[in-house]
Amino acid sequence: MEQLPLGVQLRERASFEGFVTGHNLEAVTRVQAAALQRSRAVLWLWGAAGCGRSHLLLAACAAAPLGARVTYLPLADLAESAVDFLGGALGSELLCIDDIEHGVGDPVIERALFALYRLGEEQGGRLIVAAAAPPAALGWQLADIGSRFGAAEIFQLRALDEAGEHEALRRRAAQRGLDLPEETARYLLRRFPRDMRTLGKLLDEIDVAALSAQRRLTVPFVREILGES
Image (cartoon, rainbow, N blue to C red; front, side):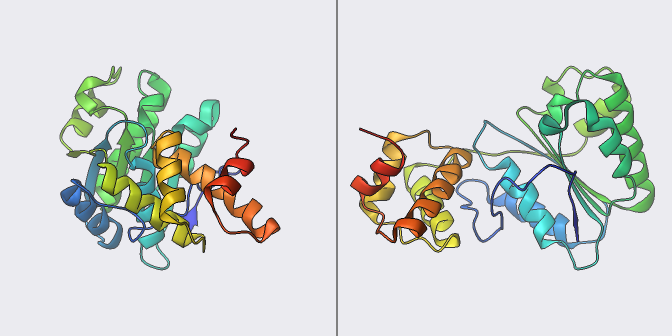
């Protein structure tokens, strides 16, 4: 169902169920609808690092109907291969482009984006884009593609409050089958950056160590795993 560039791995176990909505209900609802429907949609998600942009794109890919041609392209990871992968995404029913700002300002990449956009218009495909800023704030070289994205449905993703961060960490731990005590969750949120990408990597590291040691995730054990004094 999903097409991913070779050598690019999913960044997290992403699902809509694992996403804590917070103040982003309208954005999440529209992304869910775009993932499931078959009519034309163009969405632009933007916000600070760790706000959940990548999670929502990957959740949309996972939720797409069985048999749909789905493509996820993280431009920040593709570097000079981005144009080739964009060309290979032509005809996707659901196309999710992450970190699109990494291609803005490059005329070749912008022309490839324009070709994808036009084909999507003709074929009724869905396009969901994520970036650190809204389209009007980026330095487009090709005015046509900049203006088209400027007319998309644009949503700013808001950061979670403390309770939301705690719930997001709990859900991610549960997805991994981890029993994360409240005290340990509070320690992780207090000690490390609170963006979910960083915390997801920490949980992966903790998961492996806990499975090997067969120990509960107490604060002393987690500190030992992470090399904290």
